[in-house]
Length: 130
Image 1 (cartoon, rainbow, N blue to C red):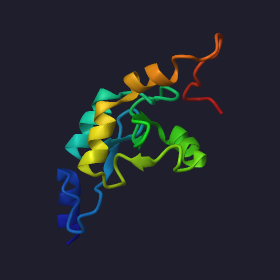
Image 2 (spheres, rainbow, N blue to C red):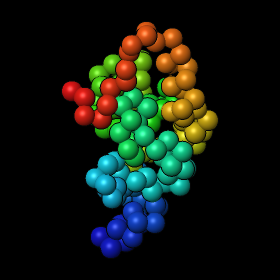
Image 3 (cartoon, rainbow, N blue to C red):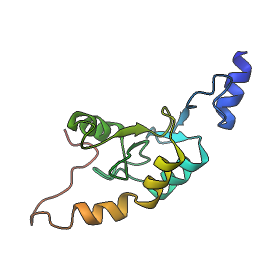
Image 4 (spheres, rainbow, N blue to C red):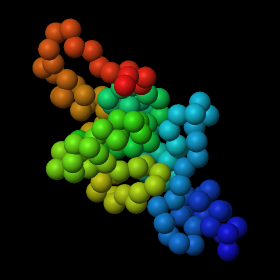
């Protein structure tokens, strides 16, 4: 029933369909909050987008190990899956291995690697960059 599915989504079980679950909009209108406890922990450990600093990112690059906002996830999707495998924290199913990789890496550690040799004077984009 619809009530069973709704209760399943609220408890994180994905409802009767066993789907990926859903999220709820953040209080400040930022990204959605992950219901899966593994992904929620990753989200709490990475409170801003790795690319632009937007609050409460709800997308991830599985192979790069970073969380990002929806705008930056679109850019990553455009790069192709051979460079960045983008998944939603609220819409997609994640394997334990995928969650473990992103949990082990994370925005701070990976940005220290990716941004170690950037040119002087270069600045990161902001959430309102076009």
